[in-house]
Length: 216
Image (cartoon, rainbow, N blue to C red; front, top):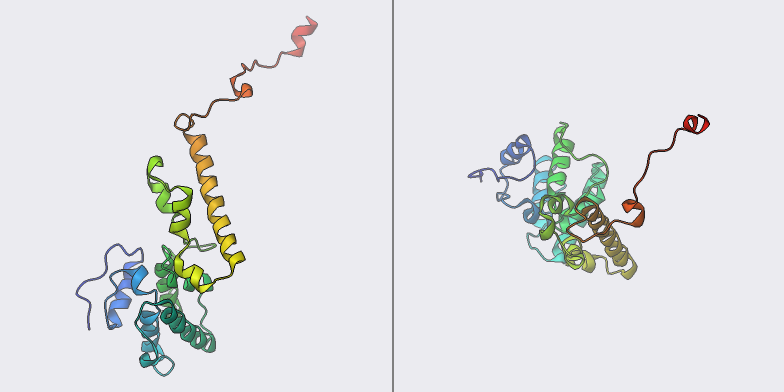
């Protein structure tokens, strides 16, 4: 099957999209975040290079959490045997439909299988929060604390890792980012938040006197 057209505004380079098209996958990825979450397309991509290691009858194209976990567990075992490294954070981000995770995953797979480097791959720690999206919004339209938690902690994450302490740490990290963003907003637009200047800020600050004038 060939693609009728390339997916639009996917956030990955056109050369990678062309490469995906050349693989003649079973279906065209229209929504990167959704279509790569269960790992089925990932297994199919690798099956073109390692058909004996990735028999597609072993993978399910369902969207339940159990299906996703089963598919990804198989993929990770084979990749470990093949010594192909994909970041665990990127895999988990893709499985839980985090913003930007699937795009980074596809680029990493492209580089691993073709030995071609992509200059636009994100450097540093992966950031799969909605921070960049929130920055683009008007201040009045940005998320509240509860909305920030809902946006950045998926239900599938909680179900996949039911440890209370782990999820509490995730919530605390989200709240910390949210509060830091609010502090920046308050400093950038104090009038909107009715922030009054402190006594120190109100005080008229005179320039220091010249000690030489005291001697004259």
